[in-house]
View (cartoon, rainbow, N blue to C red):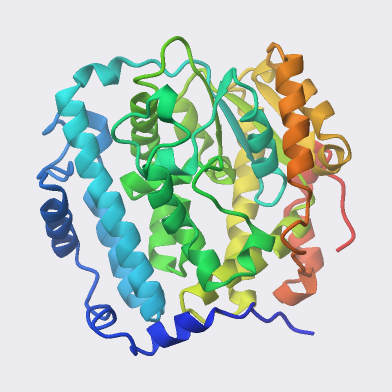
Amino acid sequence: MPWTPPQRAAWTETLAAGDIPPLTDDLDRPFDADTLLGEARARTGLSDAGEDGPGQDGLGEHDQGFREGLDRLLYALDHEADLDRVGRWWAHTWVARLLEVRLQIARYVRDDPGVLDERIHRPIFVTGGPRTGTSILHALLARDPANRVPTTWEFLRPVPPPEPATRDTDPRIGLAEREIRFITAAVPAMDAIHEKSGTLPKECISAHALAFRSEDFTGQFAIPSYAAWLAECDMRPAYAYHRLVLQILQRRTPGRTRWVLKSPAHLLTLDALVDVYPDARLAVTHRDPLTVLASLSSLIATIHHAYGNASDIRDVARTQSDLWCTAYDRLTAFRDAGRIAESDWHDSAYADFMRDPIAVVRELYATFGLDLTAEAEDAMRAHLADRPQGRHGRHNYSFEDLGLDREDVRSRLTDYQKRFLVPTEEI
């Protein structure tokens, strides 16, 4: 049977039809940067979002390219994304929050310029293709008290810095929960594909989004012109802003902090990552890329459906195939270039992780010369016991749904699979 999207909740059809005035009356207005910035300034009472160029507010490199990315994103949302009113409402809400947080960050840095001196020491970045186990590995590493893993609410609303005593009860958790769970409210089956929560670990692309240079947008919307620009743009400003967010988050955390971060999208931008984090360590997860493409294309087509875009999974698959073939090529080239010492890399296979995740974690700690305590290992085992795979249902997908030539895609990935000894799966 051909792929069909999960059913949307009934309320989305009511909203999309415009049957909830006045809520829907304003949703067809254009995505205009000056209007959205003006509204964010009015809501926050703040004025400077960093759009005046490098150095105007003391943020320097963190300002670069902010308006270009915003303008390109908004154009693509208006002219390419094919959103219904549900999608337009969500996109307006998302961009509005990003602009508000930029205003808050600029004010925070002006009030506490010493935050720029906070050192991000030897961060660990978990990366690898999407759907290869990066999320569960990141979640396990979060159970070690020696690690600092950014939660969803911290990346969505980092100002003011969290206080250690109230990090687990901060009122911003509820705000983040409502935002991050919107898509599950629209498409309940999403939890079986990719669980979201305000307190779960969050990907770095959410911090990149504050610089408006992020795969977060391309993963949510069909916006080809923005995606093409993003593939070629300088990502160092996005990583610089990412670092600033980490500096803010650790400002009230005494002592040294070992950050553990995560995003599959890092594979596309490893040079920029290392330019900003020259002492980074990378933990890379590997899985048959054809399985990755099947699972990922189903996920993204479902997200598009949630926002009213009736894109064909075959169109999604063609875009994602090109993107991730490029990502795997970049990983192979970057690894062979030797910019990071081999002792600062750790590779793991998805099958090995599924068989014995704690053994993989032990290998990672040993590779990086870290101490895995009995307390941390017990916490990781408890996390696995509390969250068995498939507890929200099963995510079904098939490579045959994608309309791709299996042998053609396989041939494009031969170098990657040989370089990292990635086994072929039956799919």
